[in-house]
Length: 265
Image (tube, rainbow, N blue to C red):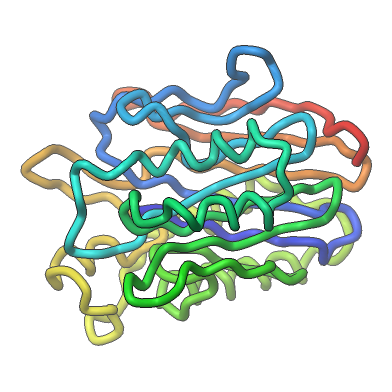
């Protein structure tokens, strides 16, 4: 499970600003955010599936995804993390990529995927859930949005809580600089759980309650599960992009920042 809040084409300094928590088993092999072979793509890497949950490129392409919370998960399904990589390696527009993906959407477990081209100011939300519904392709309008483990901007308690807190902070700084590290600490480390009567009732109640906070931490028979990294990707109107990450390595929290320029922004 993951959660992301992002601001898209609605701020004078930052045409795009994203905060994303990645939730996973702490013992799952993962490489922190960094440059991949070739030096054009930057992102973390899931060493088990080989994909990623968030990545960007010097050409101004960005993609990130979350899993859909559901009971029936197929172990033989294709890894969803490949979708991010495929978009970044593609020359297709976000809409064209989504339309191509629709032909094979049933080969994956439930996913929510955002694909964007910052140069052309085009962003699309894609999902293969609900199962009984047609494959969803929706342009993302300018504004502030939250993506958790249901449809984009679904009114889940933690999604509403994060959106409200994010808006308060953005309004506080207006059109000026936003201290991203402070935002990460203030918003993305929030451990407050939702009232049990507001849970979506998809999975067992205890599990849903443990996942209902923005920052997740829970002990399971398979080991500790929860938020093991937070990424903040900011892109300025000048084309300067900054990828800040705080991540868990063993039992120690570490942080780093990588800065680059998007060509032709």
